[in-house]
Image (cartoon, rainbow over the protein chains, first blue to last red):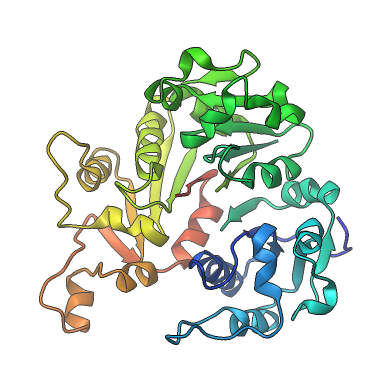
Length: 124
Length: 96
Length: 130
């Protein structure tokens, strides 16, 4: 693993961009609840899920809630193990400077070890 | 060992690429639902890195008329075989 | 082994519910116990009390109920997903001032914490996404 902390109990893989569907929000909800139940949670923003990390998001035209406010609360829930799919960042032409959270870029070759290290993996 | 479960066809969704990239050297991949279209000889090359660990659910092949068209590298399992694969794995990860 | 299933696809729109049900029916035959099925996202529509599919199609809500009756499997419905989609049991209907209710036992409205608890308690948690 890329970081020295012991692996978490639950890995939540977020693969959907904000607003287009509720998957991102519901995945984050699952992560927050798990953390509130005392589990150590790791998040991996993968594929289009990297869009969740973009700076400057807003609510929808009808007031639909986005997810950036939730992301800013992750620290309060002690969710500090954050990874972002490095290949997906590159695919969308983004860099770490575009992100609202300090997530660690994860190379494809290191991804299997992250999945193997967590007893439970949920994909949203 | 993780059992990865994929319900999307490689012809219609790129999720299979992230699933493959997330697989460890002993992990297995089970194609279900629309995913079984990936078992066709013309599609199975997408799963080249895991051909020795590639499974497809028989009843989803049968209902789609694909059972006889499956590539011979793919190991076809019935629903009991699906359960057995989950027994043998430490955990399962479902991609969509 | 003790199993739990997470069902996230809408019945009759995606195959997820059918796949999950088939898997659920195969578990006892291999000596396993299915503790719970957790319905999340559009999967909560599996709990629709008023579902009336044509007679020549599988009746999913009834099939889940039968699973509960035969094996004691808990049918847990995420309350946050359900309320947004108009799926309320009698208590929630009263609380929100609605005249009818659309969820009834053995389906239970419950929090996401139950899903996390299942992941911890069961040997295997298998997800059936849309």
